[in-house]
Image (cartoon, rainbow, N blue to C red; front, side, top):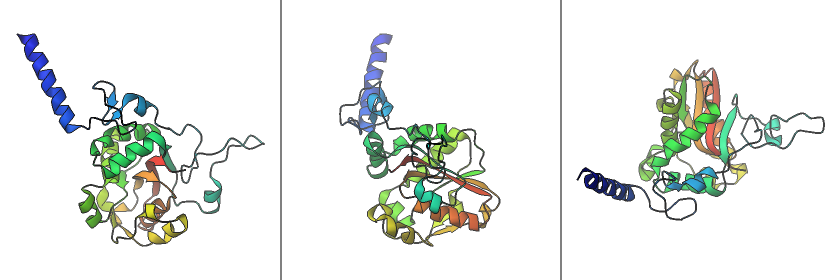
Length: 246
C-alpha cells in the first residue's frame, strides 16, 4: 500500500514539474529527461556549454591568443591595450555562442528565470575566494524592467550573492535614462548610447564592488557603470558576466 502511494506521489510530482518547467531543452530542442537536466537544459547540452578555458583579457574577458614568440602571455587584448575599461579586472565564464547563447536567450527573453541559480553556480567558480563588499547588478531602466517582468542581471546577482555569501546592493547604481538597446547598435555607437545614463549612490564610497551582468559584448555598459561608481568613491570595481561575446 505504501509503495503504491509513493508511486502515485512520484507521478504527481513529475506531472507538476512538467507543468512548471518546459518539456523541451532550450539547447537542442529535444525532450528533457527527468533525471539528467539542469533546469530547462538537458544534461548533455549543459555539460557542453562553451567555457572559456584559455587566458582572458584582464580588462574585458576576451579569450587571448597563445603566448608570443618570447613566451610571454598577453594580459589584455589589442583594443583594451589602447583603451582599457576602468575595472581592476573583468571575468566571464563562457563564450556567447552555441548552447550558452541559447540558454542565455531563454533566460533573458523567454522568462526562464529559474536558470539564474545554475548559471550563478558556474560564475561563482570563476570568482570564488576573491573579496568584495557588495555585488551590484547592471541596472535596467524601470519602465523596461516592468515590460520584461524582471532584470536578468539582478536575478544573476542575487543567485551569485547566495553562492558567495555576499550582499547584493542594487540601490547603489540606478539607470536614469532609457535609450536604444545596446544589442541593436554598432560597436562605435555603444559608448555614446550609455554615456551619462547611470547614477551611483554616495554609499558606494570605499566599497569593493563586483558588477554582475549576463553578457559582456563590447564592455561599454560595464565601462559606464564602473566610471560612475569610481566617481562616487568606490575603492575598486570588478565585473563578472556569464558569457563573453566574441
